[in-house]
Length: 208
Length: 208
Image (cartoon, rainbow over all chains, first blue to last red; front, side, top):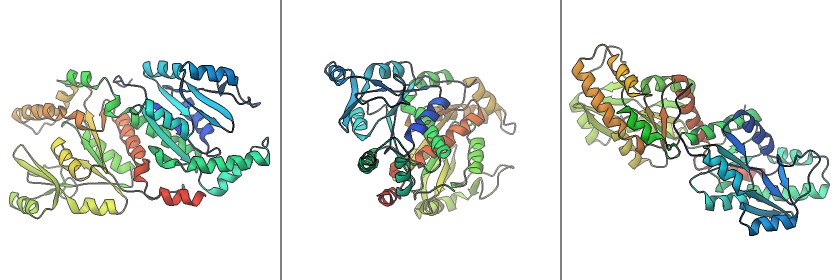
């Protein structure tokens, strides 16, 4: 067992255009990193066949969503394609207080709102696809979507990509295992930042 | 082969009290990281039997050292136990210009001077021993040193440790393989910082 110094949890944001591998990468690092938990968003959009309530999203009515905003229950919320998405505050705050890190799969709008509330604790990563052709191929691969939806998603992807420079780190995802290793390295490095290791003063005193 | 985006080289400083494993760790990451080169210091102190000129240090006379200062050939220099140590500027600048990273094994004084000249490009790591007893044991293990030298080195170690809070990252070295993985993660993460990846704007344009 290695010695451990108390530290503050951090908020790890992973943003990318749809089709850059964000969902796959999120699942992989959640599996490999035991101290990392996912922030599950609430949304008003319809559940897709493969999605699980409470794991992928909390699916709520527009009325319930509005009530949650009014009650100040969101860390951030945004509207995309007429659907609303928001991050419930409570589970995030509980995890951070336990010294765990929280992973956020949110877009640039959500990231900006989160930054305003948690500048010091926020670490943001932007994932880019390896090429225009590969992005197009991945967006077309979702067979259940209509051409209109694919076109709208390409436009949304271009809009999302235009915000890459607002992030702390940028990873080009041309190999999912390499991209996973890079995210893991960022998480490990950020945990080692002096400013996050709240137990260091006590530890250094014990060396004297 | 994975896609590579042009980036700026960085200066990685590793500081620690004597006996915290810095030399061992420096050697290990220089072996594993092909894009990382060591900055070799000049010193006026005598060469130890196991040391190699030009690899461990450039061993120079006090007169030569003073001339190098006068000619502005050092990035930083300091006096420790009546011996002088300095970092020759030219090899560092050449390596950075080639997009390679440079590792510095220098103390807190050198780090502060380097910071003044290279704030953006500097990444600093402080290594701590796992305990007071372990630090003492490691300092006594150098059989060629007299008791006076060990005592002086303990005092110097305490002085060096008192500067831990001036560093970006802090690693407690209780397991050399774990500490090496942590340094490697910091290096990988710092290379992925948006601000260091100078080729990103061009790459993002290629996605449109």
